[in-house]
Image 1: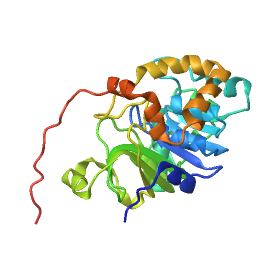
Image 2: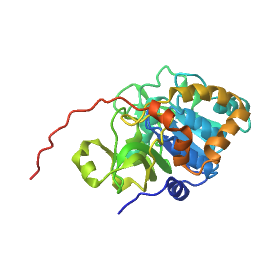
Image 3: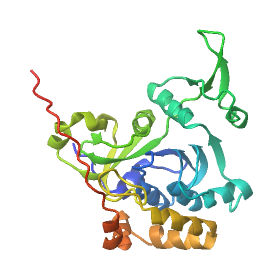
Image 4: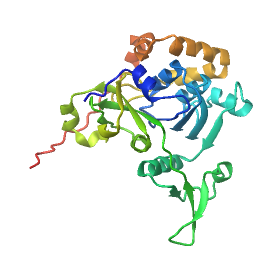
Length: 304
């Protein structure tokens, strides 16, 4: 049965006020289109979970949809700070933002524990770190198999995980190549899963290359086809990172009035991501076209 719906329907049906929402994707496959739809629909009091929250997190925080941020490292990559987030953390402007910080491995461990329905995940890497002092949810415990101390982090089970993939079948089988983050762990940990993809493809395409299937359709609630949905992030093999946007965002995010005007023009003032793509223009998209770097085909042979 097809699970393909519009972004508006997926967010409207699966993301509610007060939810814990994970938008994952590491370096590429960061779904700005989903973040924009959450803003557009006026969701409130969300807990946003992300490794390396960047521009999309700054936009969602600026729009007032996020009350709490659970994360590991944050910033405008290659540029500097996320100024809307900084204003809310440092001066409660226009309101406070609750934060809960982990290391990258700590966040991955939380998702992994959530996916496996474990009570905690043990790590060694917090030794000699200041993070346990800053975050009381990182707890030192005695190893049951030795004399040393390890650190435990609690499971993370988002209400909704939103992951962007290169392609997906209508039933939700989703395929990824290039740099992997913790999309799989977040999806298996979540109660509901939205897969956003560059293209919905026939089942025969998915079956022709099964090892690329990162997320099985059995755990997916909705599939959204949103070409260009990660801009200004990139999607390996589909479009490159828009570095100009990240540089521009620094000046925009420093000025609350400019930021509000940007949200009015690029989010509230547009019906959907298709209008966002059109407003960017053909020349901007053409400049982001990736070069070619084809992988070699493999022979899966036959079975039985």
